[in-house]
Length: 183
Image (cartoon, rainbow, N blue to C red; front, top):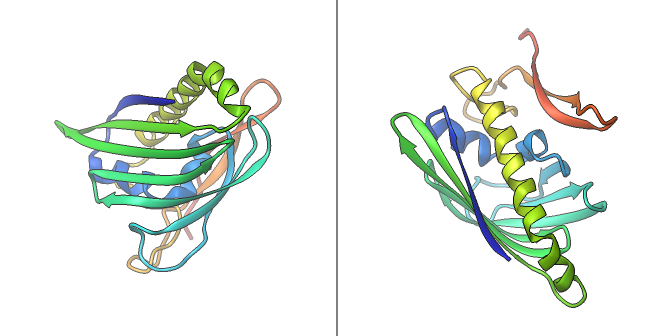
């Protein structure tokens, strides 16, 4: 199953790329992921490895690797996402100071899961589109100078933002942001 989703984010490409390429931010905008962690060391780029915990549709552990990394233009990954072998890319294009973000996904299921995947295709695409909508809202609501939520070697400081969980209205919680005072 292959599909694309696109969203225009009212932020410069550098800010969107900085946030997006810090995969530990994924749980803040993807409701199906509760945790993403880097599993290796070194600079972020091709070959960086991650693990994450999926809660929907069923709890599972996943692993992926960065396969393309062009600052402010493209980041791509390959690995397991839910029951699928997956490839996903995020292409960023500057449009008058805003960012056109296009997410292309290829999901491959094997065996019995192949039929289920074919039936769930439109639901998966819609869920990914909804997640990109959350990403857009999150980034557009942030201060104009976007930094990663984790300290970096270069800055030695974090943004002062901490992940929060907001009620979805159905008893479950979804990630959000809350500003915390800096010390």
